[in-house]
Amino acid sequence: MIINVLTGHKKEFYSSKAMLKERKLTMNIDKLILYSREFDTELNFMNFHDISFRKNNYKDQVFLYNSSEDPNLLFKSYIEDIVLALKSNGAIVIPDYAFLRAHHNKVYMEILRDTILRDIDTGISSQHFGTYEDYKIYKESVTIPAVIKGATSSGSHYVGLIKSESDLRNLPKRYSRSPSLYIELKGFLQNFHPHSKYRKKFIIQNFIPGLTGDYKVLVFGDRYYVMGRKTRKNDFRASGSGNFIFDMEVSDKMLDFSESIYSRLKVPVVSMDIASVNNRYYLIEFQCLKFGTSAVERSIRYYKKEDGLWRKFDEPSVLEKEFIRSVVTFLKKSYEKNHSC
Image (cartoon, rainbow, N blue to C red; front, side, top):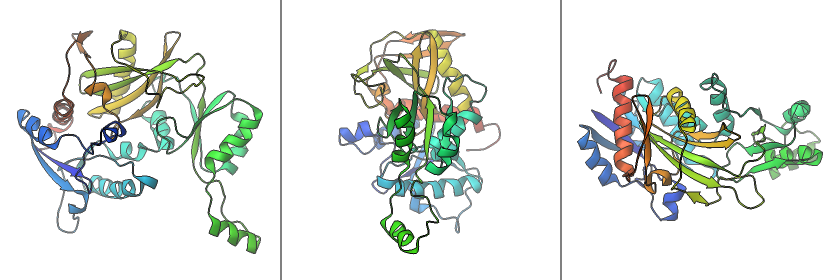
């Protein structure tokens, strides 16, 4: 099996904020190549710029890629162009383009929740808005307290709690503000404003009371890695707190909930933020690429279902090996019957 691996301009692949804190831009490429051979797979590393639709037909070729978190998501926009074109030309892109679109795009993530995960009670319902003016039309449908998130927020940035009528007016206005001195000055001079000044899209979700933390669940193929995260003092947000727990007991019910989501996404790996209150589970967010991998790198165990029962394996894992194993297994299960890779 040959897998084309698309990397950025610094030859990085799957770097995350956790890796950047350690001044690492990438997974270990040499390890990826080494472990791929164990699974009878050849990795062909390419730059996104190497893709030439004029010269090549990429139908049925497999492409593994990652997203970007560059300022203003400018390079991510370029990646989207390439990946969407590859998919349109019949290439197999891993993960599907929809999950690239959902990365740093909470509006589209919620659309995926309402489509792919429609038949699962994830505990979260969202409304999405493209402008503040749109929001004002439907403001009465928002029940407070509620959580507001900017579409491109990550960690706990641009995540707020609407607690009052004042918040109901002011927070959406603040989160959607899209300042442009030129446009606003031109509108002022002409006494005509064709564009809203509040065009940053955002979502509003139901608030989960009694939340003291959540779980970061990473699924790599059939292995489930779980990391606990406590909320910060006087804060409802666990994301970005840095208060992690790796040695913890995990219930079968929570693993079943995670499995029900993973099985519908049809991706090799996924990161899920899952909360638990009064024995009910909530899928806060999910990402299928470009997510932190501490739960795999620092975990002392993983969980795996065998013969319908969850088993706990107390052993460390190697990130690169588990990643390649998950991708190869996914491809064989999903495509081997219909494609020659």
